[in-house]
Every structure is written in structure tokens, then in C-alpha cells.
Length: 433
Image (cartoon, rainbow, N blue to C red; front, side, top):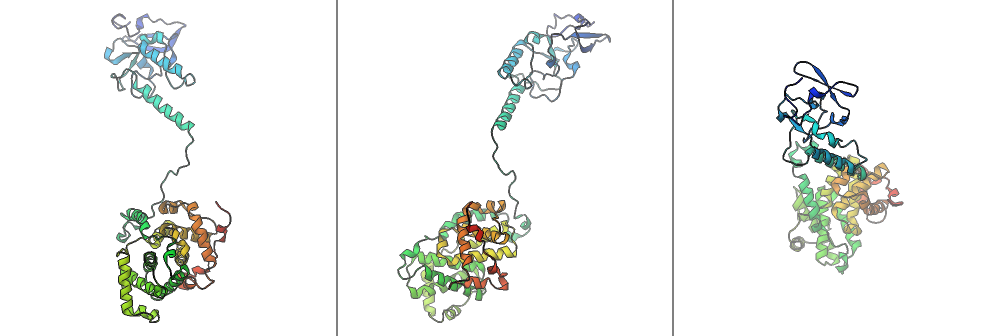
């Protein structure tokens, strides 16, 4: 028998009044004298045993039986009564969700005042009128319900492989700035483009003459063993100059050798002398004419020669494709075929480069191939490249025919891996995506 009376502590059950019998539950309490008394549990819902203490922020484990049984010898601060108001609130919440009986704890309101819970190991939240664990649990369950109802999109969980991880020790690769550089190239490539119909303002030359000039300059570039960057910048200077300045037919070749001289001055370490350029033009022009044309070109272009060409994008996209020598040579063969063709001016440099890599991959593998890394770094999907790629396949098919065969002859040598001998990816011309 425990000392004291129930009147001093109305929130607890007097163990002295509990009698053992057929209606007694399985819970036991040990008094200070060692005597065991059974607690009447016939009217108490079993869920109280596993209920979370009120009001707690989070419940990690079931309460042990000894924490639920009442002990008058323990200080009142260690107990918190479950009130009728809280029990009614719990019953109301559960009533709103009849099909979700396992989520909330059910408590009989009539017996709520006669049971206490041990709160030794829990954080009490007494400032809030509603229990925090109910708010947290309901929010979590509602979020789970929404996730179950909404069909998740097919989104890649992981970003593409870091293609620059192998160059972190190479200071020339500028890995720290590479993403910013290509982001700038992508924004600035519009300044290097020309109207795709600029030949309409030329009164004495046409697109066919432009193609002949560039095909010849590609061979000259190869003979002089100049850098790749020089070739692409030279073609860009020609188009930008012709788009802004009408020129007579007999001066077109002079424009060609002058833009080559300017591109060499910008890109090369060893620049060809003016006399060499006059010599390859069969002495059709004088030194003064070359220098005068040089002055006209740079003033027309306002000395702006720092523009992104297809070459800078080609290098990046080939790296994203983990290219070997064969894929690299075939990609450059395809894009140099595009330099000769006036029709490709409607495509920006980055798209031309991406389409060249895509077409080369399809040519080698004989299937449509465009990896996730290539799409990520080029920002072009396979569908966006298809129109340009089909055009490149037609260029490849006729590369060895006609008069403009300079690119085909160049890439038919061992130095360029006989890339021109590859079978065109004609299957790209069949059907659509």
C-alpha cells in the first residue's frame, strides 16, 4: 500500500484501490514494500501503452510499461496528465480520416483524465496548444500521399560525368574557368554569324564563287601547314567582310589571301610573308594591293577578330564524346565540307560543331548515337541536330564529285586517317524521329 491519498494527486490512479481479479490486466506495479498490485485495464484502450507522450516533438520508441503505470511517490513534475480536451482533439482528428486508423493514436476521452505518462527522456513543448508531433506527422504523411498520387517525371538523378576531371593538374586546360568560357562563347557566337542571304547584296559575285575561293584556301592552308584555328577564323573573316562590303569579282581572290594573312597574324606563331601569298595567287596582285585590302578589311570589321568559331566548340564537344583519333578526323572532315557550302551559314557555329560530331558518331557506329554528356555540354538534343546532320550527310555523299574536292583530297591522306573514305551515314536521311 502506497502512502498518501488520491485526493492529493487526482491525476494518478491509486494502486491501493486496484484489486486483482478476472478483469485485471497484465500490467504490474511494484510498491515500495515489494507488494505487487494489478491495475484494472478493462476500460483502458490498449493503444495508451504505445502512445507518444503529450505533447512531444518526436517519438522514437514505445513507452515501457513501467512508464505508463502511475506512481504517487514520483514528483508531480515528472507526470503530465492526458486531458479530456487533448483526447477529444485526437478523436476529432482521427474521425476526419476514418481510413487511416494506424496514423493517429486513439484515446478514450472518458478515461483520459485518469492516466499519466512518464516524460523523462522527451522534450516537452508546452508553449503550443496543439501537440507538435501531430503537426509534424500529418505534414509528413500528407507529403507522402502527394508523392504517391503524382506521377514522377523521368529525371536523371545524377549529373553528367565531369569530362574535365582528368585535366585538373593541367594549368593550360583552365578547368576552373572552362564552363564560364564556353558559356561566354555561346552568348557571343551571334556576333560571328552573318545573314544567310548576304550574297543578295553582292552584284558581281555569287555563292558558287565563294565556295570555289574557300575550297582553294583550304588547300593553301594545308600546304602552308597552318593551325586549324587559322582556317576557321579566315572563313569567318571572309563572310563577315563580304556581308558588309560589296566586292568585284576580280578582287575576290585578293580578299581571300588578305583574310588568310590577318588570320595568321592573329593565330600563328610564324606568319607567312606577303610575298608568299602573292606567289600562290600567281602574282595577280601587288604588295600594295594586299596591304590596302588588309586595311580595308580590318576597318570594315572594326578590328574585331575575337569571335567564337566552330573550331572552339568542336574541341569541347569532341571531349564530351570521349573521341578517339578516328572520330576526331571524321568530325573535322565533315565540318570542313560545311565551310565550303553557303547553305550552312544559317546554322550557328555551336550547332554546326555539335552536328558534325553527331554525324561522325553515326557514321562510325552505323546507329544514331548522341550521349547524355554530349547533349549536356552542347545544349543541343538529337532532334535539334537532325536537320543540319542530314545536310552534312549529303555533303559527304558528293564530296568526291564535282569541282570542289579540295576537302576530300585533304582527308584522303594518311595524315588525316583517310577519313574521307568512310561510308556516309545515309540511314540518317531515311525516316525521322
